[in-house]
Length: 423
Image (tube, rainbow, N blue to C red; front, top):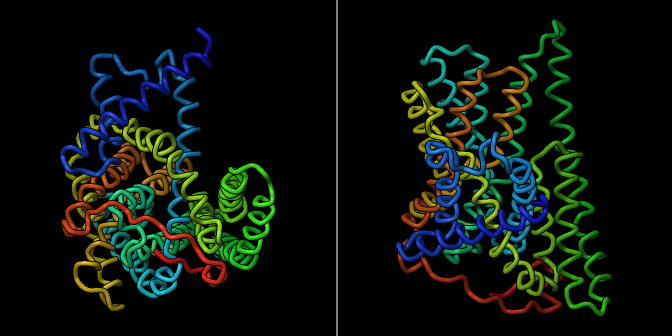
């Protein structure tokens, strides 16, 4: 059978099963994304490979299709974070900059020090222990953002703080990672190690400065030109293309996670008058295709059997990863005026490591910073923190707030020029 024809069946099975599991989850009052994640786990190696039934093992006859699926998943995460950016309440985000910074700072310090301490107590070397701590600093809130959308709370003060803190956390985490890798350099010259730290930091800083200076202008110009087209979907298409461009620039030019670029692009789009039309056009596509594909892809990577005899260390690191983020981020939010419940929500929302943690762990493994066994532990830890977050977020929100997302009222020209909208 032709590969492209196989791909059609492959994608149909994945999407239909993901949505079926999402429906089951909703009947149990669980977030939709939790069902989609569970679909990936059920289709993956933990269960089906025991009976040699899984399509998704590296030796499977459809392994090339799995590679295609992973590409769709990576595109999907960029589209999802772009939509999360477009959904962001700009005035609330501006008001949340201080709590976002301090929440991000607390969420880096506690997991890093706690993870390194646990790894050292387990007998690992200093460099490997410090790197494990660095991996625990990562935050990827794609699933948090999608869960907040489903709960109707993405545009709350806590939701805006979580997304803002995630961007800052990305920068701080990558700085920490750069420092750790620079410390492991084999060069005997201290200046070389210093340069190894300074260059990535300067690269990220330059990218962010240029992006905030030119990004809003580029977005407004492109959307104005697209609106002049007779095609009703030109504006949404232009916005989606811009999100991919910003994601590429963030990864290739800024040395950051691609989702940082797509989220920033979404924030810039949120300040334009075309915001509501773009949301309407993209939300259905993301919920029907990109979302299920991405969340299933995460579940497919889980194979609990790889933990082997390292369960104690894994559980200790998992405890540090969860409690460290909750306490660190909640403390930062609490210190800047949040009440206890909203601080807890911010802390829980920052738990998942997602693809940022996976990228960081794979980078350390590729340069020899960690052993294969510890790399497997980190991968499973990243996935477990990602899987648990939707359920935890549902628990910490009061029942009265677990409502559908409110409809958006179209922007006026005056409010869009100020980057504000009315809901």
